[in-house]
Length: 341
Image (cartoon, rainbow, N blue to C red; front, side, top):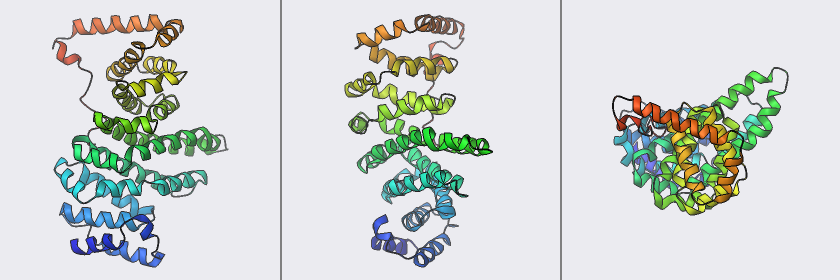
């Protein structure tokens, strides 16, 4: 089985070559590979999954293999195998421009399989999140294969989608419920995408890619559109807190005219979420340290200084009341959105 999988991938080295297969040929290859998915051997499963990712056009087959890969990627012991078998690149390829356009097309025409397509994209993004959680070689492979660029494209597309298609559908008679369901699916996908970016941004050597593909701008476009989603907002704050240390990223933050308003709005909305508050305050601290304009803008924002002082007072009170000392007042790294869940 392993040799056959390697031979198929050698014959079809990328998605472009797989397009030469007819529908019947694709179905036969996928059907043959699927027969081996009951194996308990992770290496065999990775090889079979790679074949299916390469050949299938989507639908139930893609969702099934995405769930399988997500399950396997939750085990840290599989990191080296996942990397060796080229699954980082294969999953990125499966999430590429063709998949993005397919998902957008399903949503715009309200196809019957749109939830299935969104779920598959979510699980594939979850594979990338898990693969990049603890493995620097996997992070390097994802960045080298254009992972930051692709994830930034997904961020941008989902913002445009929310502005246009989803809001239009919600306005149709009987469309609110379906639009809400799709919104939930998009939000779940964005949680995985931003968690992956958070993992990739942990390596200082990769941050030039974040600058090159304007990840700061894309995240700041996402944030005000999903104000209520605490997990997504925490992921965004994690990424931005790391990027705010990079001068070019700080410049991009400063170039967004409403950046400080977004930050204050999010902190007010999630003021009981200490990990989120700590990171957004860190971002504001990084920016106000170098920009008089932002300092003046925050000071001029109604009730902003009062709110920040109240946060400070509450934090001091909480610190004094804690029995476990300063360690229990950490920035909340436990329960990280980059964890393998």
